[in-house]
Image (cartoon, rainbow, N blue to C red; front, top):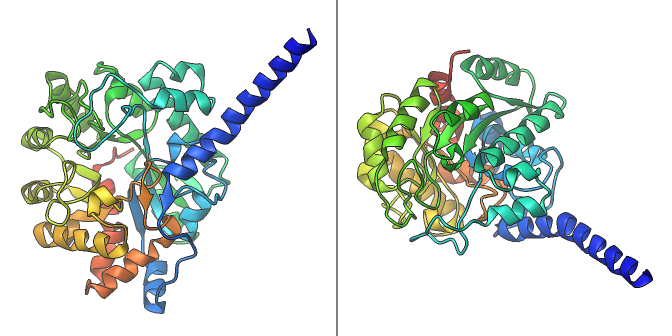
Length: 387
């Protein structure tokens, strides 16, 4: 009997160790930086950076067990570090399924790595077998963080919300506006009516696909890389009716074409690279960059190797310059992909390095203000539900 009790105690302690230690270890290994903070920049860059409205269109921090309100020494972001980096608006995405042995070229949809992560992080049982519930749970996490932030973070659901936050930000430094997005629409679980479930939970941006083809359409990394399905077309129409932004990050070229052919509102590509500076299956062609901009869309440039082909500010600025030259400065933004299981050149406290890089590349202060956040602010004020 004693031996049994000892075995049970050992198993219990091992389980506690897995749930408490393993998620943080995986997080720190998968969300690393090339250069650790603190980051130094010129006085001119620091002064300009302090004046900017900074917006980032993609961060996957909600996937991890990291407390958003507590500063951490690993991963890429949390509220204290976002505040230090002077970020005024952050789009937080929900990740619900990723294939095992995931790669940029071709993935099937019949495996999933998130289930084990959800279990290890002690997510509610309802999330273990439901992609919709995983998205809803991550929404609950963001809303709880905002509620407990002592007014330092607020969720943006409407144009009126954002306008109110912008007025408050003029008087109170450090207030973060948070927008909720989904990385792929497989959480719909094949049901059009679940668009309304996501909308009611606060989602205002919707990526159509992630690393595999789904019921909506083809992924740039999928098996068939097809266009929009019949359901996908219905979903795009419903998203537009609800004033939810359509996000074409990870979409196959055929899906990009299909969406642009039917869209009546601007779309975004929240985190991407461009073929003109970094060839790759998920990066936008010059033609797609111009077509998205022609319809009023905004393209967020990501920071990781597969997006810009190097880990550094110079590569990010090079991609921004190419996109500006093709599409105009009003259609380019930041889309870090922080906390998306990537290695980044810096964490969110290092965004001043992009400001400095843009200055060194000859961008004007007004153009830098647009790129660093002004374009995202304008698009959201034009596109969000009015109230």
